[in-house]
Length: 367
Ligand SMILES: NC(=O)c1ccc[n+]([C@@H]2O[C@H](COP(=O)([O-])OP(=O)(O)OC[C@H]3O[C@@H](n4cnc5c(N)ncnc54)[C@H](O)[C@@H]3O)[C@@H](O)[C@H]2O)c1
Image 1 (tube, rainbow, N blue to C red):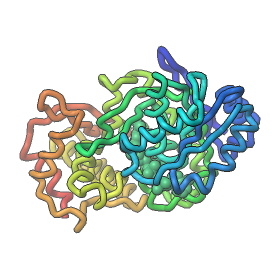
Image 2: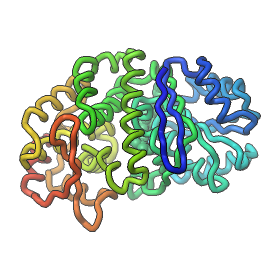
Image 3: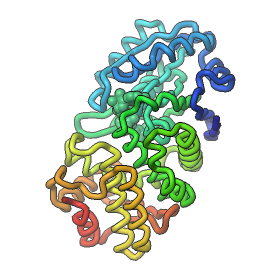
Image 4: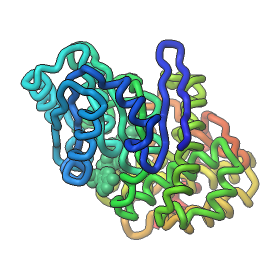
């Protein structure tokens, strides 16, 4: 078992990472502290619910919850909408949730984001607990308090910063996770290593396949390490006014690819992997990083089963990708700010006006 503390000025909470966290004394005690004597709403999706909702509901009741009702919505990004949110508000009223009630998000990043925004806004805010079940949610979306839903115009356009009271990272929930989802999460793990942790990068060079297995003891170490890295970044810059932007490494390029592929050509992890390749190529071309960095990053992404180029999935020109990058919600005053690596474990956030080099870096990975 590993415990990571997230320390923020107005909130601090623990991330408990273990293979059987719900059977451990520490996990039970933490859950009990969050739910004892309270009405609880477990929010989940149509894939995770049938697998784990009964077990988790029983654990919640054993931990002393007054009631534990389950709300299930259809799995997938297409459910991350105001419509799903509205149905959760009606569910909350029907179930008699009050300000002392607790929302528990049991699922991947979609469930965490929707349930978190439900918790942030229902009755002007009720406590919430994250129980992430995908690798991406374990290492990224369950930590740091960003919660949101999508609009037809774009992803995560309506949301809040709302921290959970507890993150219960039950690794055994990963056993049924499809390998494509593991790869998607692994792209974020590689991201942490490139931006912040050269030792983690070397560990991944040795153990990438064991995460994909998934070998749960290895996953426990890696997940806890990533959570610690994210916790440090979030503690320094909760609202993404500065340093937190480094977590977007590969994402400005990747989001443009996802958008152009209409969210079906690439998974998020695949788009981010290609995006990290574009960012690293650009860093080399601008003289910020050695070519060796691209070689090692490409080799690791390939071992993780992630793409290095768009392949036939995208027929767009580099100019179109760049135009979509300017639409990213992180663009301020029309200026593109990019996270570029300088060596493994170190990045800079910088403006980039050198359009020819940008187009070259993008174009070299298309096709
Ligand atoms: N809030 C943040 O900081 C943050 C960060 C990164 C990503 N996100 C968001 O996270 C979302 C992506 O998250 P995701 O990749 O976890 O996707 P997801 O929640 O859609 O889960 C992926 C698929 O795996 C299924 N699944 C989940 N857990 C499972 C399990 N244990 N066994 C079997 N199947 C399981 C889900 O039902 C779904 O079909 C996006 O909406 C993204 O915007 C948020």
